[in-house]
Amino acid sequence: MTTAAIAGELERLLGAGHVSTDPAELELCSVDFSEQRLATAAVIARPGSTEEVRGIVSIARAHSAPLVPRGASMSYTLGALPQREGSIIVDMRRMNRVLAISVEDLCVTVEPGVTWAQLRTALADCPCEVPFHGTFSGRAATVGGGLGNWAIGWGKGNIATYLIGLEVVLPDGRLLQTGALATNPDHPGLSHYGPDLTRLFVHDAGSLGIKTRACFRLEPKPGGSAYATWGFDDEDRALELMSAIGRLGVATDLFVFGPYHHQVFSSRPKPPASEVRALLATVARGSSSRRNAARNILGLLRGGSLGYLRRWPWSVQTIVDGATQRAADGSMAAVRAAARRLGGRSLPPSLVIAMRTMPFVPIDELIVGMDGECSFPSNCTVALSEGMKLKRALDEFFAARAGFMQEHGLTATRLYLATANAFGAEPIIYWKDRMNALRYSVLTGERRERFGSQPANPAARAAALALRREMVDTVFTPFRPMHVQIGKYYPYRASRQGGDNWSVLEDFKNVVDPTRIMNPGALGLD
Ligand SMILES: Cc1cc2nc3c(=O)[nH]c(=O)nc-3n(C[C@H](O)[C@H](O)[C@H](O)COP(=O)(O)OP(=O)(O)OC[C@H]3O[C@@H](n4cnc5c(N)ncnc54)[C@H](O)[C@@H]3O)c2cc1C
Image 1: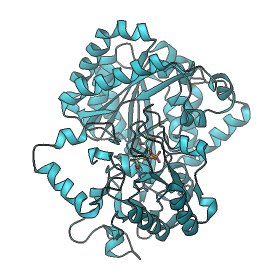
Image 2 (image 1 turned 180 degrees about the vertical axis):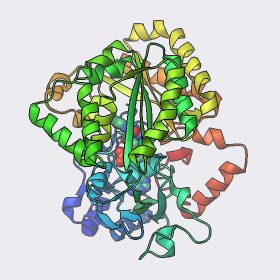
Image 3 (image 1 turned 135 degrees about the vertical axis):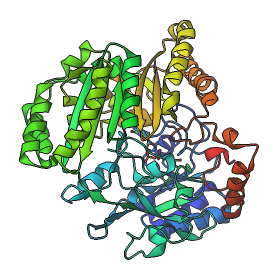
């Protein structure tokens, strides 16, 4: 069966406008920010309903064609890329409806193509929220992609913390509802009854099925929020404070930014007055009372254009929410005491207020450097007690490779974040190169003009890829860490092999996907 024939069947199912074999679109679906290419996508299918997803699975099964579920492909670990020729990309972004918001039952049900920005807008006038707010990439990144990658980022916990049910089309064609969506779909607040299969499909990199619906628990929005920022000359002290705040267990958001990102944030062009007014209005709307609005606007204005960040190489940025402003301030008092002990210099919390107000950054601002560098971050999450050891191991690794990096024009920076009881480090490697199709697609305005046609630099790219691989294998792996977005990049399979943990997972895969059509290669399930 040729691709043309499969495309024909897909067109009969979905309508011609929802199937593509356009070479430029196929190219876009064959590369991500990891800069590796495994195979070229054969056809793109864009379903609009669960029934259509089942139809696509049925066509794929009939022709043994691999299926690759895809959200916005904002990943850097190959998860949404085809590993085998002849693959059908299942682009889920047409399924982007917020299906039901129930304030009475405290739950929201969405289709997987909903972006975090869309969900935020849908809940803007609601007294409740999903306390996990989404990924920094939430302008484009979808809930379905976050579920495949175990998203962390803005808000409390991670994507699984408030997830109470899923609907999944299994590779064998069956339609599975889990948790709240299995118990009583009319009142999905009842989160489970009997064994709950929901988490089996979280962080599965799309290897176990295609998610078509997700249900999250809502909570009342915080009655008050306290914001704080501290500057540090010393990276270690900043990280000690991040760990100390993590242990207090009160922070909703907690990040450490370094010199590179301070420069990025403080060199943003001054926004026009209309944009500033819009930002202030959004801050006011997002505040729980008039008094808090005045306080937050003052906090924002105190920082001006963030020039003060240039003075400090490192900053700890945190938000503490509470049922009331008093509760938030009370919890923040303990955080401030820890900051004083560690010698942090209190700075205006304007960046973190602005980011809470508009949490989803322009994608290209983080993934394309200030001078048009390509970059890939890598995530390594370890226990809080291992954080400083991981930091020192990274210091040694990059110091030993300074010559190699200089020779190939590579630079590196780091972000850190604490989630619940874990310490996350994100080293980011940069090099100058051409923009691949995905990077080019996220470049906007003047930056597209400046950087869109840079020449290819395959030697630097190869060096960056080798450096990243070596870092993952020799620095990260000995910590037995957890990585968000396993995709087809992190050595998950190797970390599980040699015991029943892997064989039970593989047995499940064999039952639902004996011919291995669902995202081959993801999680190491070839
Ligand atoms: C600028 C930037 C900022 C980022 N910030 C963060 C951050 O704060 N936190 C974080 O965790 N990550 C972050 N990321 C990484 C990435 O954006 C997230 O992991 C995001 O959740 C990916 O969503 P997506 O819709 O692009 O998913 P994709 O990349 O398209 O897919 C991710 C995985 O899920 C699978 N998948 C997608 N949809 C479905 C579905 N419906 N059913 C089954 N499987 C599916 C895919 O096969 C793939 O394996 C960032 C990336 C960038 C570029």
